[in-house]
Length: 386
Ligand SMILES: *Cc1c(COP(=O)(O)O)cnc(C)c1O
Image 1 (cartoon, rainbow, N blue to C red):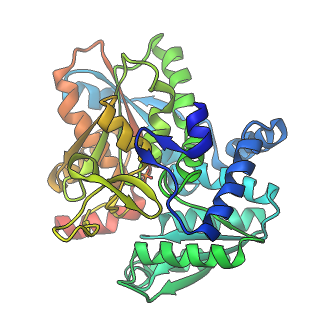
Image 2: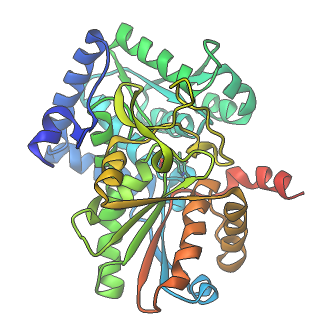
């Protein structure tokens, strides 16, 4: 990591920290602690222990032969984040940040959640580490995701419905930040994606980089060479940045992020400040963040992590969009041909691989990051198809 990133968290013109002074002090302290512990041997030994024993890493890099033959081009490998405890990549970051919270002496963990996936991952790890857990969730979202609210409560968390604003994710973030400013001496804010003020994007990338650390080792073992492309879906950008991290300095590897065509932050966004950092944001005519709609709740965010904004502008990574129809087709095709039901978010990456693979030769390789499993989405897909 460059000295520049360490000091102020910029990726080109993106990132930084645009927060009130009282919050900046909290962010400065968090940065200092993160940079200290990330290289601490005891901390890393403890992290490795929980990633293995609790999350279930390392997870496989699975070659999918039937899908490869059906598509008739590049060899397809899936990085199986769907096999982690709780069924997605989010737990990698949650375990890392909770261990940091413990080292910092925090007694309370707070988090924001939209559809509930990050809230459930946070509540899960808080149960195991015996931490008090408060989840802020827009009131509207608590009604739409009642089952996830119950899951978090089962796990011992307190879910606070936020009535302010439109009762959505943005309002939950504001409430969590307000709590942090008031209670910073005993409270850790566990952010769920590679977004927010510095050091969050850098910290979330650090904990998610395990994805590409493993996949690079695994593909070298299996194929004796690097992949030609790595494909991941992009919401805030955490699974994608984790899947890309160890390939960014390998120019032969194409890095491709996939967005829903109804939330194309990277393909249509403009530089702006959102939630305390600068990134590409989708704005409406009045210059306000545009409401987005995705069939995959985890991809429903008008902004995008600062490093992806920079990778896009610098040309190192490519970002593409996929339609709902293509996502639904990929969801069914992976289920039918390989017996793997993907999360609707992950099905975006699968759908783009389906377009790309036939344009490549049979000795080329694509790694698709399967960010999560689709059990949570089966009922929704059932309703959409009937
Ligand atoms: C939350 C989620 C995402 C989107 O979040 P990122 O930070 O962009 O990774 C993608 N896939 C799954 C399965 C998720 O739960």
